[in-house]
Image 1 (cartoon, rainbow, N blue to C red):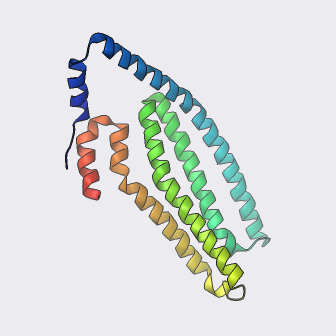
Image 2: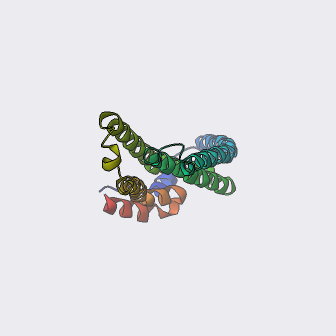
Image 3: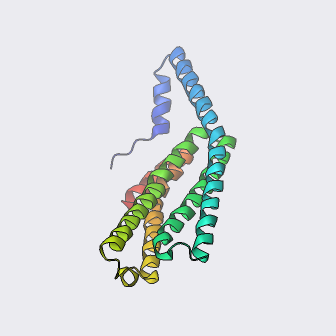
Length: 195
């Protein structure tokens, strides 16, 4: 595997550039940091709004489930997905608040990496499970209770969470490199070993 030390490459490029080009690049970086700072001011607000709505939805679903107003088998995947949304909202709010006090652009990249790993896998696998549940309930209405037992649905929910966490964990070394560029050499070696 070919490895490029980006810090050394940046220093070498800076030595071969004129003073005006270096100033131009620094102004561009400052503008980029300013724009990511404005994005990060809004991110905790949207995360808190998402957290409140997800918590409200979870409370409404649990109230309906406990009152036996909706079938528990069909809504178990929805409860799992809503809990994942609450988890994501809290993580995104915490990370964006952390980014406001440290490096904004690196934290934005780490959040995008989280959303592209855990969020996408959790959402996709939840949708697939809901589609399969719906298909079974329509095509086999009399056998639905026996096919989709609470135990099987619990296994599906557990598998969805394990798959999402393992997929996100496989990219964890890349996240440490994004957040802290000084760990670049170690992170790429660990990341290449996980693949």
